[in-house]
Length: 77
Length: 335
Image 1 (tube, rainbow over the protein chains, first blue to last red):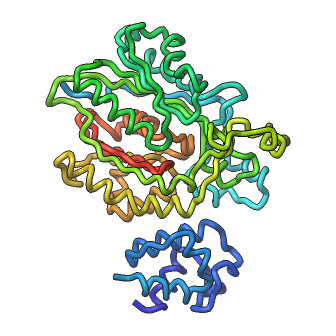
Image 2 (cartoon, chains in turn blue, yellow):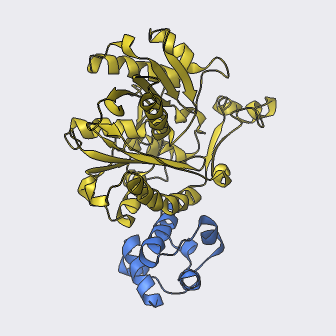
Image 3 (tube, rainbow over the protein chains, first blue to last red):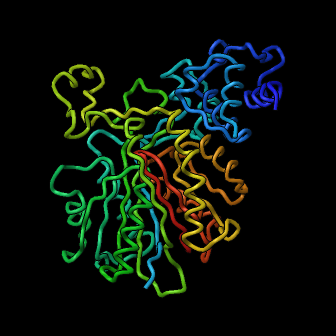
């Protein structure tokens, strides 16, 4: 897996249009549409696709797509 | 002797609140988003002074009528709620009298939340299979709306009030039954879903009532939920619980005709279904019209599944509940 794979999956789950293209530097909370729903979507996606558990606290501590990718890689078995 | 689920009825308060109503209260919200996030379109709300035992009473009366059940045959009553009438006497005792159940009837309260129904089933099964009772009336009823702060949109969009009545009765072996149970508890998660100032620890005081004066005092306490932690808790414990339930009943996933989970939240249920690779057709949800009614969700969903023919005589139905505690439990029932 590379970060583009994660970006593609996140974009699909977020149902984002092309204008709001995610990049590694995108800050989740900086997204115009960010809501608590997106946090749930991230937890569910990471759990299903990468079999990695992230918690609400992890999300509070991370900021960008790159941070999420790094966390997944550090926990992936 | 087997225990089996013989009949179910439920009662909803007349008053309800729609997604449109909520959007007019919280202008930042959109109807479609609320539905996407919760799977709920409507939740019924009790009126002032109508409490959990009242909803349970109406549900029980409905059960006796709808299924032509002779109330004098009831020999045990279990009342499950997070909103008891009193610290004493047991609310189950007052319900025995209101429902004109026989005086030789046993009656206990089982104050429990999301896993209340499955816990009640396990107690009913134990009573019946040990020949202590033959007809156990299980009343699961909750009024979460009374402990939600009116400004708490995240909780208001999910929860609804309801009472359910289920008759668990003795039946011949080899026919219908309530199977073996899987249980789990992790009290380290207690703070993530809790009704504060609702009991003897840190009891509500004059300052509390003053602080909440504008919204009626929050006199029954106030529910607080860390949604993200509850979400990850469910993703963590439900899959191994399902495996354990199947193992304890010597069944494979394919043997199950229908999966009925505690109706916590529509989005969470769809994530769990996908994670567990359960076909959509075998996964029953009923949240749109009622929301999360705490201990009443599973009997309400079962009632609706039976009504539309989704759950039929002889079907094996896996029930799984999880939530406040943390607590989780489940079983397989054969209708």
